[in-house]
Length: 285
Image (cartoon, rainbow, N blue to C red; front, side):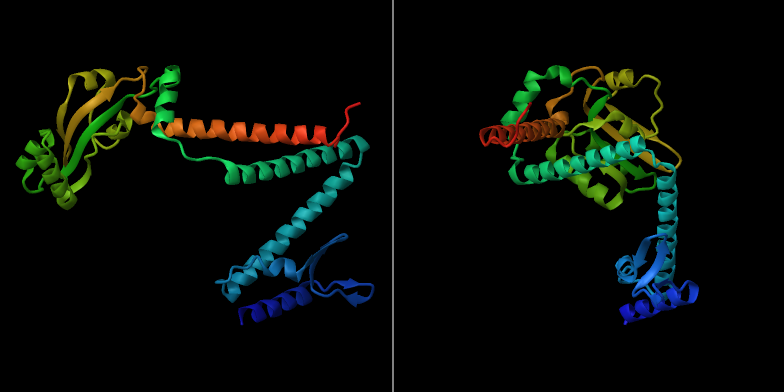
């Protein structure tokens, strides 16, 4: 039903606004012309979303046709003003280079998707970390932390004060259960590292020396007009020191995968060259 309406709309749009003729006859399915370039109905139908109503379809079609006309007028004007042989040759050269880049990129992408081994084990990650410590200098302060944000009128705040300070597994479990019910925000995974600056976005801590703050504080309680914030700093690393492996694991995995990718592409290029040499597919004069 929609397709029938769209087809009817196209005919109405074309015939009422600008009926085009070719050798004295109306050209079938044509909706626009710019000099010797033509836009046909089948080029336009597929741009309309399947869920578009009649009014939306009409607007989409008109916009598409107008944009097509403007673009092709611009191209015609540009071609008319760039007719010199040297300019044309340069444009053709750039187009060829762009085409070649697209083809080789698509081929390499397909090769990588089919051939790349994406499994990186822990031993490879640890080995890379040990061999390249100079690559893992921290640019920011990081922390391991237990963090709770709760409203001032929340129940059992005294227990929260006890739980967040504790290292007992059962106390942490009680704190997590409490946070799921009453906390506005909390973070209880003290095995992973976080950027200290990211935490400061959540907690109203005023400090002019972040490194000194980390060195001198472990248990922190602050509040604003509505909330109380509990912070247990389990560990920290100051910027410019060596970043811990746990913080760099994903980064190292990506480095290893990228290295494999480059090696795979290099191997492919060498194989193609060697095969061409063997089969005398090319000559260098």
